[in-house]
Amino acid sequence: MPSPEAMIAAVHAYVDGFERGDADALAALFADDATVEDPVGTPPRRGREEIGAFYALSVATGAKLELLGEPRCAGDYVAFPFAVKLEWQGRRQVIEVIDTFRFDAAGKITEMRAFFGPANLKTA
Image 1: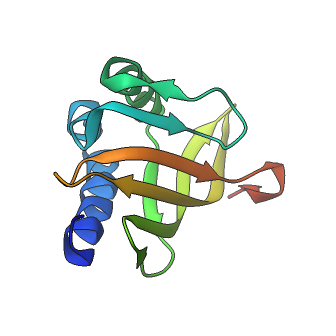
Image 2: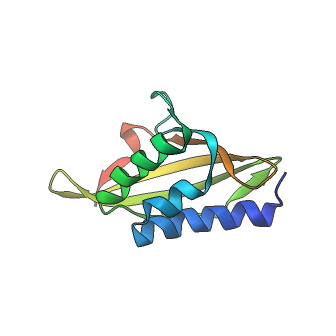
């Protein structure tokens, strides 16, 4: 299991990947057989190829992330609150999200889940 410091570093690398619009850097954070459920309740994307395609579309929106609090580590998980800021349908939007990452022994993300719903989407 990675250290809390390593898990928190992955959170910051994730935020930085969005800042740079670097889908490859985002996909590289994940294990080959990882899953991404974004948002929770939608079919998970499985494997690095599907995850890479998902992040390519995500960064193409120009979305930027802003941490809204400190990441919290427990066992092999980290949870963190953040805002997604983007222009969507001609309007500046903010989505407040809580993500969880689960890690393998090598420090790669094996599972990402994004918790948000319609009440968390606001016009900026």
